[in-house]
Image 1 (cartoon, rainbow, N blue to C red):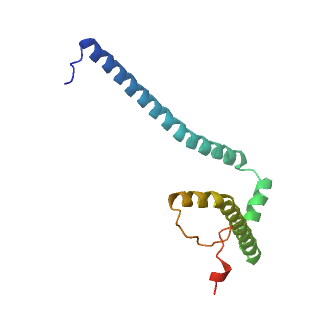
Image 2 (cartoon, helix red, strand yellow):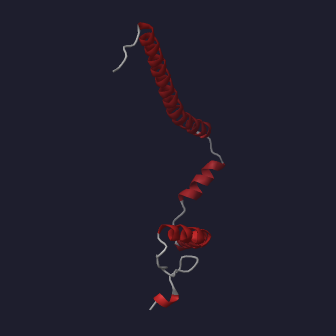
Image 3 (cartoon, helix red, strand yellow):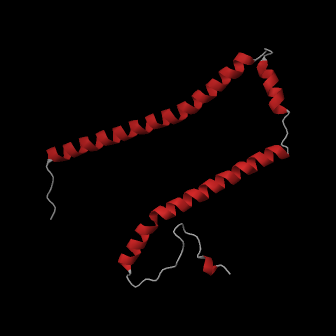
Length: 134
């Protein structure tokens, strides 16, 4: 059976609930102020940058013309392709090192779960067994 709360207990519970709700609302307002205030600040800074250059011929005009006239050619494509290739090779090497580092531990846990388990005979770095490639 539930015990009826006294008047003072109910008042104390109400006070705590009100305090919690107030702090929740304040946190929500502060969160929104930070979020949207940051966006407004960034746009204000962009406005200040453009305002300081408006009506003036500067070196920035030369940079705008230079970057505006750039066209994507084969060289840029080869650079991005090469960077992608290097990134992929680095990720593959990292994956193999991680598999090699964790391989012994994983086998130990698998043997604990099922001692009669057969091995897949994968390499220490996760490569397929050369005998399986045919």
